[in-house]
Structures are given as C-alpha cells and as structure tokens.
Image (tube, rainbow over all chains, first blue to last red):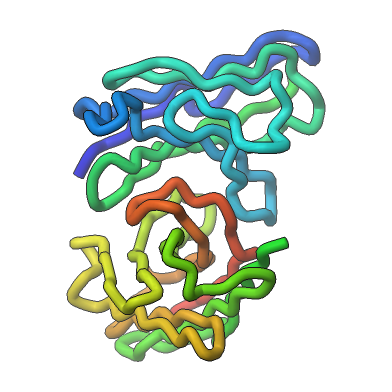
Length: 113
Length: 120
C-alpha cells in the first residue's frame, strides 16, 4: 500500500494568514497517461462527511473558494489556504488514487490562533 | 443534486455480518461514468477505503478486508449494499457511501455517514 504522511498533525494560524499543509506519498503517484499526480485533498468538519476540495493535486473542485490551492508533484504535495477564514477550521486529508487500495493521510487539524 | 443516504442497523454483535445500504437519489447508479463505494472512519481516526462497485457489478476491494467484504448493486432500486462478515469491535466506525469517477477516487459525493457499533 502507498503510505500517505501529512504534516503537521495540527496547525494553528491567525485569521487572514496563510496555512500550508504537507502530504508525502511513499512512492510516486504520477499517472503517466495524463502526466498528472493522483492526489486529492478533502476538508472534514465535525459531524460531516469529507468534502472534496482538490483533485489531480491542483485542480480545485467547482464551488471551492480560490483561497484553497493544491500543489506539488511526485511524492510531495501541499494544500495552501491563502487567507484563513473562520469557516476553514476543520480536519484536512490527502488521498492518493494512483493504486489500489486508495489510501488517506492521517489528517491535519487546522485551528485559529 | 445528487444525494447518497446510508441505512442499516447501528449496532451489531461480534462475529455477525454487518449490512448497510446506500440509496442514491438525483442521479442514476446505472451511469457508465461513475463508481460507487464504501469508506469508513473509526471514531476519532482516519479514513479507510473498503471497496467500490461499478453499475455492471464489477467490484474492487481493499485487500485488507477482501475476505470479509461483499458489495452488490441493485440498479432497479438505485442502491448498493455493503456486507462485512465476522465483525469485531475494530469494525466500529462511521460508514460512508460515496461516488467516484475512477475506481480509486477521488470521491466527489458522500453520504452523511452512519455509525455502526460492534458490541456484545
């Protein structure tokens, strides 16, 4: 299985400041057919299911605010929130969909400082 | 708007078979574009993919659970079902059904989830 490791486990950022979450895969998840990385980011608020924010490492889903951006390639990826809003407090997970079984990172808890 | 809704018993006993159904509304489970899957989350822990099914009945399972999992689809009812056999306390989790455009994700629509507790 591909192991996905997120850092940090928790993060506190001031409102309006930048928040960056990292995700590292234990092997490359570059899909050769389209030269894109098979990585997704999800946001999960308490009592709710995960919400897909970003797919293919950097493609933002429809309706997701543009302050969320995904980047990286190969084995190292980031999710950046450019200006933290109160409603962004949540758990964030990365997921690789390159190989079976698809696997998730352990999650990063984002809070307001 | 596509909606998914899990249903089934919230409590099970060790060694029994857990059975959950996901009912899809606002879209057809018979679409050739999508896969339908189950993902679980133990209380306070991370996410684990259980498996997916295509409308044709083709199934894809997590090898760690494959010996105990069966996923089936009923296109006439727009539903798919998860059966997990020989459950233990370690199977206590919130079980989500979800849709993906690929066998392995990403998962763009999710049900609200249902908590299943395994206890004697």
